[in-house]
Every structure is written in structure tokens, then in C-alpha cells.
Length: 416
Image (tube, rainbow, N blue to C red; front, top):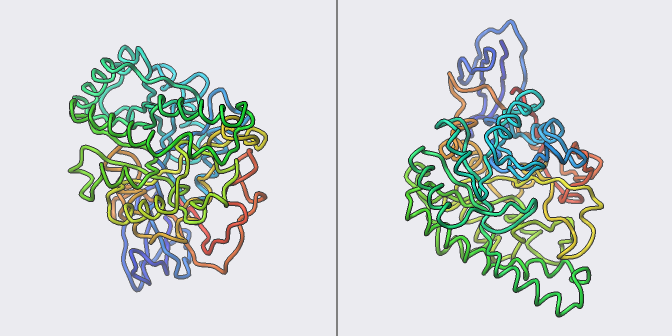
């Protein structure tokens, strides 16, 4: 048994939680019940359900020189994330049932958190996706727009077949939406302007991978979803126009189209181009302060349903270069919650990173601390301000895009 006392739960101080094994057995306020096991004094800190990050790249198999499931899950746990869904663009990519099941087994043996993974849809994917039983995996990931790993999307006829199958089997389809033709034209223009690919500065990244490229691909993905009835989850929304044109508040359970954004698109400081370097180069590109403001409002309103980190570690040397040469992606699971607490309410973060992903993907916490719920619990404590440094980083990549930023909370995962 374990007893947590003097916690704040949902804004109520003086709360306590009694844990039996991996399950919450009872909760209350005031005088707690006797406990012969471990007693943890929360000292007035907020106690929240462990968060779910439904968008991580833990790099294993094949890219262990960058990171492993073991290392990145420790970083996630340090950031209050107790459930993850891993992406398929590894080496080899998890585009077969055999490869995905092997990856899931590896994760279950080595991860410090609850580990799940998406199936990656590429041309010819139908012969593999039909091997999964309903509920066996949380969903299918499609790259409608080439990103790190160069996983091409199926052609339109196979995409329609895939999405109809997903609709029939109650399996959500998560899409990376950027238009390759627009990106290719913008890339050619940038090379013509600067003379060669290696001379295109990183400041051109948001011009090359433009808002137009995002909006066009998102519109196409939604059209396919409407034609097939599939539940579409749009990954890492980065523009105000996508919010305005395609998203609206509402109950996640009632939506066919849901959407995610990430802390790096929400961040007011990073939205200023002058504050970004190649370390902040991610796909889609971070856009403008106006986009970030609209995204923060959409998270509050529920037009954006989930927050995932898109955690994607690279070695620092791989992040050197310009818009066409520096690797895209950044590690963020360890400090995402602490950073978001600087500009988003805790209850909204918890909703977008527990209940909403649970309703969409069927994994993690349903967002409540109550008898019978999993005892994946996290303490969030207000502290004196302190600065994030690279020396704090758990991931073997050894750096964070949030280095030098000041935060005001510490995070402690109590149980997984």
C-alpha cells in the first residue's frame, strides 16, 4: 500500500490518495485512512494523472546511436509522461505486423513507461494492416508529406482502402500533413536564390515548409476522411489557418476530425524567428507569433484536442547546418510539461494529455484520480525559478531546445 497526503487534486487542497499495487483504492480530503505502507507527503503540490504523449520518436530499432526506448522513456517519466505512442519511422520502419510486434515487445521489456506504437502506412500496406485485430494497436500513421525517415504515403486508391478499413475497425489514422509539391517548389526557389542547398540558411525553413503546404495537405486529408468515415487525427498543427478553416471545439467522442499540436508550436518565445536556431528546426516548421497565439487559444477552447511532443532526438552534430542540411526534430519530453506551465493552465494540459488521447487512441489515463483508476500519478510542485541546462538532459543526445529558459515547477512521477 502507498498513501499520498497533503496533495491538491483538481484544485482541492488537503487531498489524499490510497494506492494498492497499481490501482487507486480510495481518495478523499481531510484525515486520511491509516496506512502501514509508504506515506508520501505532497506538501501541497498538485497531483495529476500521468500524462500520455501520443507522438514520440524513440529511435529504436536501428537508430540507437541517437537514443533508445529505454533512454527516452526515462526522459519522458522525468517529465511526468507515463504513457507514450511511438512513431514508425525507424530503421527498419515499422511497416509490417512482424516488425511492429517485435518493437512492442522490446518496448514492454525496456521502457520505464507504458509503451505503445503506431503502424506505419506505406505503399502496399493493406496486406499488413489487416493482420492486426481491432484494439491491438492505437492507430495508423501516414506521412502525407515527406519528413525524417522518408516514409512515402500510399497512393490515393490505397489510402481510400486503408481509411475505409480503419473506419470499419475503429482505428484512428494520424497524418503528418505537408504538401510535397509545394515544399519542392519552395526548395528549388531557395536553392536558386542562395546558389546551393548548403547555403540556404535555417531561417528559410518556415518559408520552404510553408503554411500553404500545411493547409493544402490538411484539406486533402480531411477530404479523404470524409469520403471514408475514418477518424482522422491531424498531427502537429502549426498554423492559425488550419485552426480557422478545419477545427472546432467539441467533445472528442463526437468528432471525426481531431487534431494535435506540440509545445514548440505553442511557445511564445520560440514563435519569434530571431530566437530560433537549427536546434529548433522541426517539421512542420514553427511559424509566427500570430500562429502560436491562435494555437494556444485553440488548445484552451478544445478546437485542438491533444498535445503531443513530437519528441525526436538527434545528435547535436546532426543539427548543424541550414534549412536543407540540418536534421529536423528536437527532444522535448523531459521539459514539455514544465515549459507549457509557463503559458497554459494545468487543468487544460491534463485534459489534452490524458482524457483526450485516451478517448482517441484507447491508451493511458482517462484523466481522473478516482478509485479503480490506474495509479500512474505525478506531482507538480511550484518552486523558485530555475534555468534549464543541457546538463540536466537524460537523453543521450545531450541537449534540449529549451536550454536557457526559466521554469517554475518540478515534476515527480510517483508510480508507473
